[in-house]
Length: 368
Ligand code: NCD
Image (cartoon, rainbow, N blue to C red; front, side, top):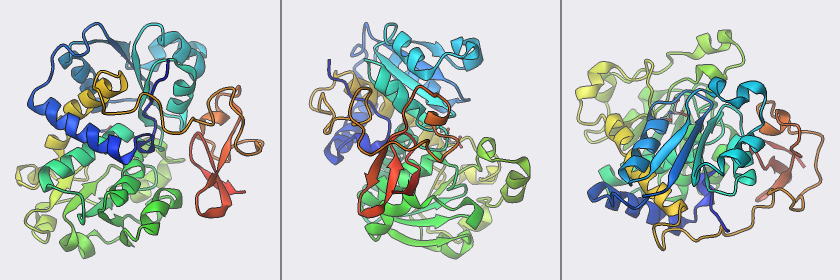
């Protein structure tokens, strides 16, 4: 049986992404409460979560389906050393669709390669968070009418934050313009910005939020990802760099949106919550209709939303030929290939960069 997975936003064609956003709007207006009757969604969460896991479960329950899973990997066989590949092959017999969050980069791709049912990446380390990206786009489109020409400031931990890694290229593709606002230690990795840069969508990169706040149509604030820092000293040096306050907002456009994937630590002062521009709680609520649309589409229950088979065959699927001679290992210590040693590292060319190849699991780039 062909199946589709959602590991990166690139797994959806531009038309499919539009169709998902339209379906989410339909789901929000009038959800078909029995569409997923008889179907089971598994949530395998190896990392903390409130919004993502509960909104996936809420979405499935609202569609008439059922859910099972774990929110603490220490209560599962992972604690006994089970691999992601084996867990995926077991859970495919218990559920019709799998949602996985894991601290290791490329983990969801491994689950997708081994499971016969659709796999949705709910965050793989500092790599990607595609469903957050889709709900961010949904929120911007709903509140601003269009993404074309919108000036969005991505602010905070752009180095370790997976939400912005997923979001930046898609925003650029849809016609938005970007400011990247971060201290040099937390700058966006070049590979996440390459596409936006090539499209002329990066208006500036600066550590100075105050200098650009007046130009923004939306400010996307992010948490400094404490759990991904190599040492607590490095985290202590940069934590609390940005705080969105009422004083800062007095210098912003009167209709600039404040977004945040949440949870916030201290990036947005509580006084901002009552400002009509504060959109982060509405953004979190949009996770339910967006995830309803994704579940329905990937289960093949929403006709004409996504094609039953991915556009190009996934060259890294088990048993397929390697696109590039394998190296010893991926240079990224957080890559799944350095944690699950039965996997063969695989690399593919970087478009328009003949000198570079990227890891097909974690996207880390190295010289070819
Ligand atoms: C984000 C995540 O897990 O990456 N949270 C979420 O899913 N809404 C952001 C974060 O943890 O800072």
